[in-house]
Length: 472
Length: 131
Image (tube, rainbow over all chains, first blue to last red; front, side, top):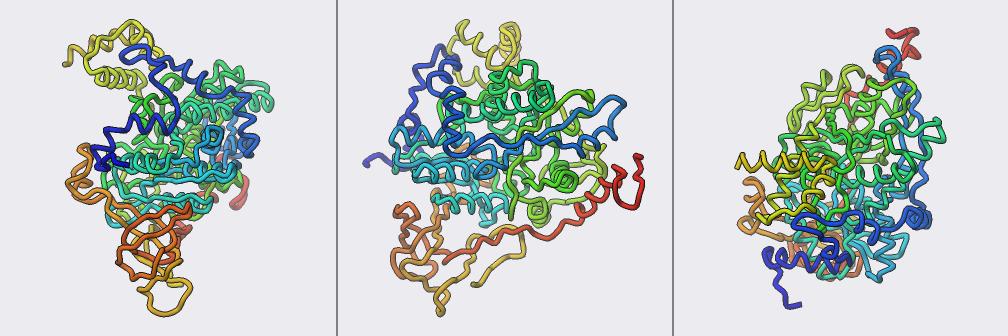
């Protein structure tokens, strides 16, 4: 290979590297300066729901239990106004082979990679997705490389990430552990070039259609268990795939009026590429550091067009605090006998707050749990936070300060959500889209695309563009 | 095996434990399972969008595999990974431990279960505040 390997040289080749590493011609779906035919991409590149079910059954993914949280529901009713307090269910996704819903995403990518003759798969992830790809690759006999952002410059890693690295190694993956920085992508590209492996990106149509079965199961199983579709489904939101795939699956199950609520852990103020901030957060995903950037510009992903487009599907976006998540993780263990990983309980926090607003005969579903273990546990993560100089105490979670103070609520009535403004997020998205168009004139098709991609209207997009022009 | 832990829940990656063969703990032998370290980008070569604190430090890589030849800690070596790929770097650890664990119980969480059951009026000495 004669091509240069400097940062600038490799980044300049990124489009070509990506194209051969995912085997998708994204150009053919382009319909304007910004616009592309999203549904055509999902239909042509992805698989049908039936095909995904079949692929997942081959590797024992999905069909996880839908569990009613009776004691937590009762607790919520005790802190709600008369007649309020919806029934809370959780989809126990920790029952998947590697312990999280990420197996659904990995299953389809790995199936595709095998079918297309790639010798192996690579994924860039510090989260559960690494273990999922490694596990699915093991089941299908493919080689697997995981690239993780693991350490700060002192060589210190959060226990949760160390555990995820261990899990990847347990499933036979070669694990590249990097220090903090977005140049992880450069290492990733070099590995794709060197190995010719498939890029098991979180953001291809394969990955997102893999989650549609989760939304479908949530819709169908809730209907069977309660006689109604879920009134609300809470989805932990980071890169957008979970929201997108779940919402699409719910629709395919016939659940057309379910409110899809995205929830992220509030890490505002912490810089995701900062060496010093890196170990001051207790959550490695499901937080606003991914949730907001990916909602306001999904195409920042490692593929040209992101199949995860969360603004199309979220009806509401809320944040919760780290301390509330640890508290609710303890609650789930003690009241329901389910010990699960903290990060996966982000949406359960939101469900407890939101169930209080809902009527007793309504149903709210938390669509995931994740496995727990050494490192991925409130004790391990809070002990580490303390070591990093973060204060941990009981009190009002409103006093939470990301990176400085984690507040474990004194009482369940203190659990609440903070609403993020979707109109503002839509405007940010449109601002980013215009910046990426680089001054090219927008066609009517582009405007219609922006309206769809933000789940707003042509009028909203046009007004926003006029407002932004005035600001400049 | 010397399990080296810095007292934190995290793993200090450069510390090393020595498994297997007795003797000089700074020696490693062909075939040992080891961890190597390399600098991918030096300060000054980092991406322009990286914040100031990260600009000042290198982008480093750690990876594990089987040592291709006898060496001492700190030597430049090559390894063969579990996938059979050759990777070069500085030898930093031999058979490194996974020192992450469940940690110590966190006092702020220890009473949560009891509080919640008492609130539900089910346990904790009879009637709870809500009943």
